[in-house]
Image: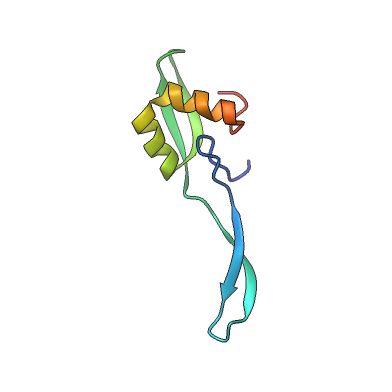
Length: 80
């Protein structure tokens, strides 16, 4: 499974480690992801999402149904 948030679309970024001598080597910045279960009232079932901390805040603010609808519209999730 790819390391991508299913609500916000956050994914791995690439950057540099910079040493004291300013030598640069490649590194990866990983999003803060969690496997989290949510109760989806509209379908009366539990769903599991790979979601970032910012995604959890989005679900708390907008509601699960609205957040899933927006994520599906933007192409972050295929099915839920």
